Image (cartoon, rainbow, N blue to C red; front, side, top):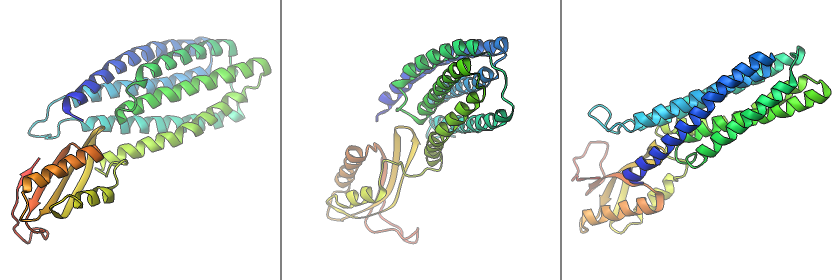
Length: 302
């Protein structure tokens, strides 16, 4: 992925985040007011979940704007990693909120609050429409980065919360079973937590500079060794700077009879076409280095 395409994708994501943030913020205020007026603890709890949506969207927006700052002498890779930090923070926030919902639902089972189901139903329906609109706005960008994916998941989980509140309001309206509200909350928490954990693991893997999930290091190494003229490849490192920006460094031992630059170019083309890695730093050697004990014939190529 080249830089211009990367910046264009981020610009599109930024506009979508702004629209979703405005929409969610307006409804957050409305839902808090509605919860107070109807004395609905369920709506106020859902407003707390909506608050995490607004926070997540705001953080994601800040992360994208910080990520556009150019590289400097202190941060030579630029500020792209802020995007991953935002994704990790968002997922931790969602994880804690989901745990709180499960805990609060358990507490209510023994003492279910009195709920004004009609007002609860109307506000929850409006909330669902707002969440669906925000999801539609973010859909086109949700797979472009972990940052956008986490923001989308926040809105998606809140949409499920709205559906649960709607179902609960209807059942309570016709049966008077207040405990249904707690049951729905538990089911939503159980459904959201595993998906949140998966996204958190992806973010942590990037922060720990782990090999991207879509790349098999053994397969990549075998492919590089298969290039004509390559005798050995070692000190191979592959990591993700931010979503869509995979970097690779390696030492390559090249047959002395071959043109080093041509061999390295073939390796770079192989990594780009088969593994989607366009940012590579390859160091060619005439023989394998032994942890700095030997001085090798070096040449740096990016």
